[in-house]
Image (cartoon, rainbow, N blue to C red; front, side, top):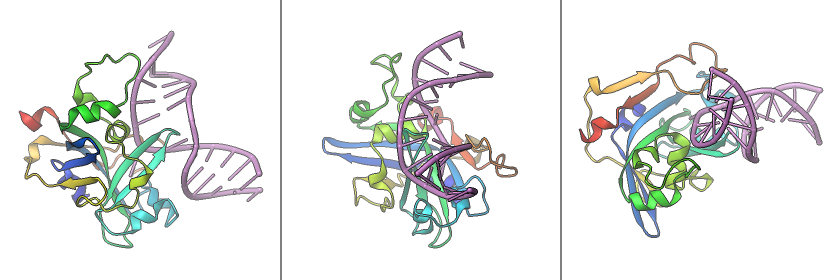
Length: 191
DNA sequence: AGCACGATTAACT
DNA sequence: GTTAATCGTGCTC
């Protein structure tokens, strides 16, 4: 959960064959432990959740709603399941590369602002072409074409908003309402 | 082997 | 505000 707060301002990078794309992480959520009934690890160690029991700094990528990929970063030591969901990034490099892959719904025109390309966990994965290939991979440095770096960006506490995690419809309290979502207004990233 | 559900999104009324 | 799209996962029988 500490990790989720600290991931704000980190940079997600993606090496495409045509070049590098990157975005600043501005929204995260924490999922922590088998006791957290909002966390997939509530089911214990299963084929799906085993990555969360592995070493920190590896990607936990899973498929949901029959069509969407989401990416987490394993956030605690081996045998202690915890992960940080990356919910949104602010594109800064390689916008043309992200534009190629981004979701392109019917109503959206060709000039849809880049801020909207990666403002949800599934949209971000689509634009960055993140899927099951990255599940379990080390993303602390560029081993696989996907990694996270510290660019030295720091935020004051009054810029960081917390709120309950999104989409936990049938999760019981207190997990449904615990404020383990961290977010910065993307306008604050560049002023 | 079958089933209910989901860390979402976009289009619709 | 409501709903469809769509399938892997974990649970039950």
